[in-house]
Length: 94
Image: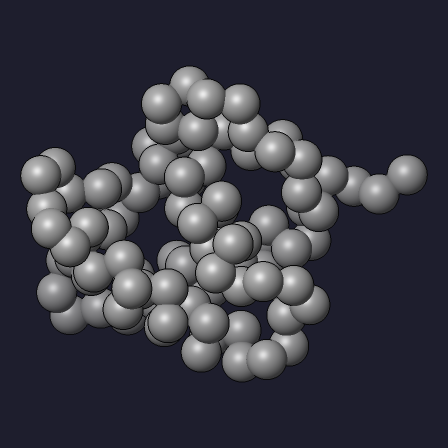
């Protein structure tokens, strides 16, 4: 049986089961991107593209889908924050 993780959602919606290995790859890329930022916040699109660049084609699957899923999980776990009332959406480390 594959090693999976059940993701959480900040609005208490049902999460999804994903590969723990893929989760860790995306989570580490997210942390790397946000920790490297001089500003505290990034727009979601800029953030997503930076994560995509960080995994640099070595990821099997839709990077954008995994970024969104892992980002929501990290928000629910208190590792990331979405800046309230921001348009476009801004993301930062908690």
